[in-house]
Amino acid sequence: MALRNKSRLRNTLKKLSSLALGDDDPHASAQEALDFLSMMAGKKPVMILGRGYNEQEWIKGVLQIAAELKLHTVEGPFWDASADSGAGSLLPRWYLDHTRAAFAEYRAWYICRARDVAKEVAEICETEVITVEQEARLLNYPECCVRAHYDRAANYQGIWLDLLRRKADGDEVKAMELLAGNQSLDPETDEDLKRLEVSMRTISVPFTSINACDACVDGGPDAPANVKSLEGRELARVIDEGLLRALG
Image (cartoon, rainbow, N blue to C red):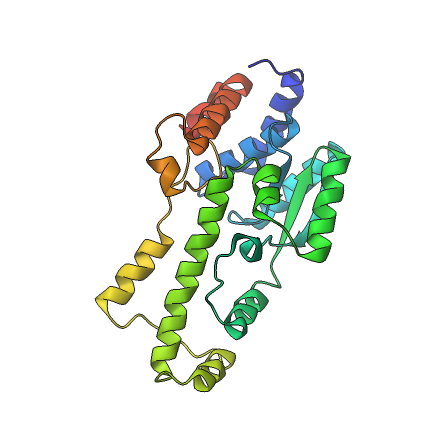
């Protein structure tokens, strides 16, 4: 892999690594660094900061580095393509509205190299409307894995809705009142626990921030997520062997 701006990428990696000194989770910050460098190298249109790994000093430092590099940064809500994916279509509107409102206060920063990409990101953040295709393309994720993410999230919410309805003895109005009152819920049976564990189970794809869908897990080296993994590994190797080891 030939990189035109290898020295700039290596210098940026040094700055990013200095932010992560003493980090309790060096693998997480190393993957964030690779995502940032992938965006700089033009491999990944957008790098998301502050979602998942949200250590505040890291966020502050990365935003400063992005400003020094004259990259485009858009602050906005967490992206949610569940409406486009169709995931959660069986959940009632009152429940969906409540769960979405719970995430409204959370913010992320979308860092881009290209002005036209930043314009698209700004529109998404302003309208709070994004498609699965857009999210996959902008983050350089396989579309199948993005869609699976929303399916898992919908299944997870569906389990809690079942628990809520059970507590309300099947009374929908009472269930709405319990939810509005932030009634605490706990799994009551082994089956409840098993369903929750399955819905939360993810398989991280090495050298990426992707959680693999079942098809990619079973699809061998040519599966989309595994191709992205090989590309990420090669980028890390070309930039710095230390980064490769940190993620290996």
